[in-house]
Amino acid sequence: MTEPTASDPAPAPPTGRPGPVVARTVEELDRARAALGGRRTALVPTMGALHSGHRRLIATAREHADAVVVSVFVNPLQFGPTEDFDRYPRPFEADLAVCADAGVDVVFAPGVDVMYPGPQIVTVHPGAMGQVLEGEFRPGFFEGVLTVVSKLFHLVRPDVAVFGQKDAQQLAVVRRMVRDLCLRVEIVGAATVRDPDGLATSSRNVYLSPAERRSALALSRALLAGADAAVTGAIGILSAAREVLDEAATATPPVAVDYLSLVEPTTFTEVSGDYRGDAVLVVAAWVGETRLIDNVPISL
Ligand SMILES: Nc1ncnc2c1ncn2[C@@H]1O[C@H](COP(=O)(O)OP(=O)(O)OP(=O)(O)O)[C@@H](O)[C@H]1O
Ligand SMILES: CC(C)(CO)[C@@H](O)C(=O)[O-]
Ligand code: BAL
Image (cartoon, rainbow, N blue to C red; front, side, top):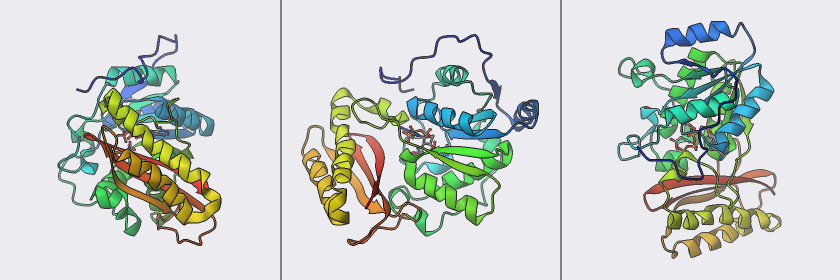
């Protein structure tokens, strides 16, 4: 297992609060859910290795509901065959300490056999907006995400679910699923949390060596350069961001860009040169063996 680095949250000190109820099966979840006594409930879906970004999601959940359920599940269906499913960090005891400190009521941490009791024949397909950008570079990713998120919605039956703006395309695709399938859950987005150096907090940051982490700062610098060029329009935004990334491509270690794009926030279609309105500047890149994504909302 990958060990957390210094930038990860240390296990929280005891607060005196009772910790969350841990449910590992559907039956345990049903019992924990019943004990919440019909309180308005928020779900925060995660893959664990909780950090300050997840803490913000939990805090947002508490603003929108009276009880908070955090799910911790590394979903095999959304990982490609050459991706990092096996080495994804799983520091469950530290995650429980974070949840206890944040006042979470229930942690739902099912095994793969609980979420996938047999072969998964029926899945939720994201349509065209799930085939571009993240969907193009991670084929099957959004189908895996939507399938597991809809299962979590059915099992937990939350009134509200909180997702991070850091995974902006995921948030947009989930919103679209809820609309198109008439799901009775309110989706709330939470702004991206960054470390003081600008790097968006992410469970995968633990993979970065100190030198890789320095190179990775080019992502947030490129987004900032793009946002600063907002008055110049779509083409100016993209070229300002591209300039930073081109320089980072020759750094040691280099940053290898999968995509940089300026998109309309609900459909994730690329905006044209004369576009006016809300947009998101999105980037995905590799530093060494680690793939990072980031984005910034921009009004043109
Ligand atoms: N820095 C962040 N700020 C706000 N939300 C975040 C941040 N990082 C993750 N989230 C949100 O937390 C939720 C769970 O994400 P996940 O557990 O995959 O964490 P992650 O850090 O994004 O992991 P990974 O590095 O694997 O992408 C998602 O809704 C995601 O958008
Ligand atoms: C939403 C999610 C928990 C589904 O596995 C995952 O994609 C994530 O952590 O963003
Ligand atoms: N944070 C999105 C989940 C994933 O990268 O697999």
